[in-house]
Image 1 (tube, rainbow, N blue to C red):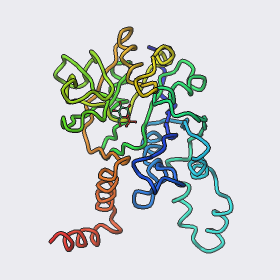
Image 2 (cartoon, protein in one colour; image 1 turned 90 degrees about the vertical axis):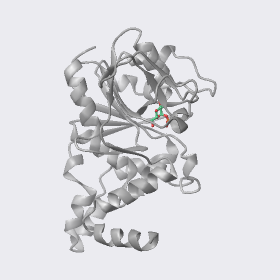
Image 3 (cartoon, protein in one colour; image 1 turned 60 degrees about the vertical axis):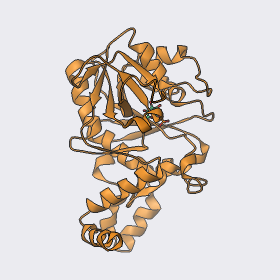
Image 4 (cartoon, rainbow, N blue to C red; image 1 turned 120 degrees about the vertical axis):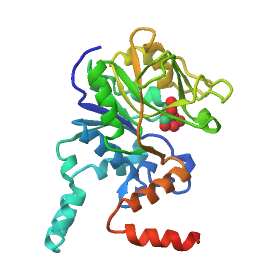
Length: 290
Ligand code: G1P
């Protein structure tokens, strides 16, 4: 595995968002706001904070608002300046996003996460790269990507973020098997969405990865699963036959914002972290639960 710096991140955003219909009929799920920022921006900021310079969205024609969101909006800027609302400029052009460039690759057919990642092959060349699934929102210091990057810098090997999951929910995730007992684990195996009785452990893949570009060779050879999708998990299982892959136990909070429960929990959590509304929301919650 090369020891080049990680400067590119792939964000797959082409999914339908069926768990959030009807909200996602005309609005991409990634553009649903958590407080005052669309979900996808949390992942983009997490990438920017660890030094990623290029964001590669795997998207489709129904998601044009994502591209608009990350483009310059001269008219809005002029309007804010002329109406004495200059202080809002930082909200649409935050410093943290200033050094980023964006690319958009079309994925018209929903052929799975592995297929989505494979579409970015020509953009990545032979560098290690990050993958962030924007549905998963992480709240921690250091961030989930930062924890992964620390492991990557130490071992110079592909590394995926994992967390412990209750067996009732394990069938929703990629699940790892490992003989190690302390993080970071060296992966022995990984399986996509096993039933609880077939799961090799209770340690699941959460949506952050740093991968060697060799993964593209493996993605090419992976067969479609029973639902016709090409799984990134299957390509990782193939990669570990050739080179080590580490799994890093994420320390912090994680919210699956692709589900109603996770989305609302993340909203409440971030509201309580926001000094401008924290007091009011705390007393509102107290009032309604008493
Ligand atoms: C994807 C991956 C799965 C991983 C999960 C994390 O599944 O295929 O291995 O555990 O993200 O959120 P999805 O949620 O897209 O079905």
